[in-house]
Image (cartoon, rainbow, N blue to C red; front, top):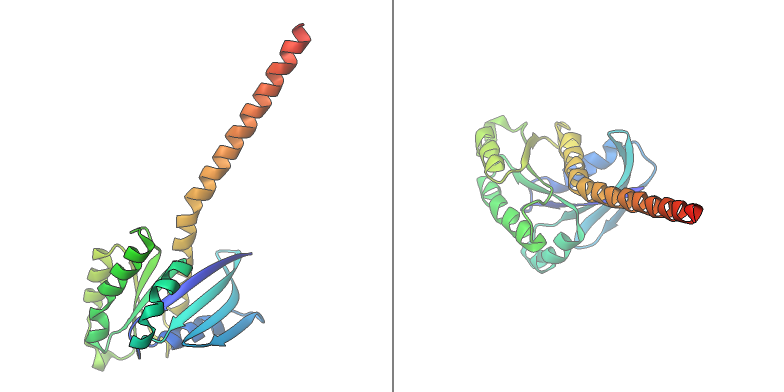
Length: 202
């Protein structure tokens, strides 16, 4: 069963832990582990698009003292949720920096990344508009969701979309391998048949 390693990034207090717990509770599974350290690590088994998989989710603290570990986490993970709170503009303003850090560390712009504006139920406290979130995501070529970890709005959709992006990135490599394998077998059969014809003619 394929394991997808996901990293949830964002400033402290944006609801990263709540989102992670919601996705774990949303997956009907007895396979759930929790590993509290300077980050929270969850492992949950679920089915996405009829394909079973294991999600290993790292929920970072967002605190300055753990910034030194960020590169290690980024290198170990396959996909990233960049989370801000729609009621705290300063948390939105760091998203592009996080995006740049992830793509620079991974040395690629083809990194599976989802931008999440959490707390969409806080309509009277909103400091970041829906359009601003959509515009930033479009600028960075990322998919975007506004979520509510309190009301379970778009939580599964955001995580599942991230897994689909990871599979899209992995897919072409697997396809190329399959094509190479098929081509190799075809040539092998052709060579064997040629040898057989040669020795039969003799």
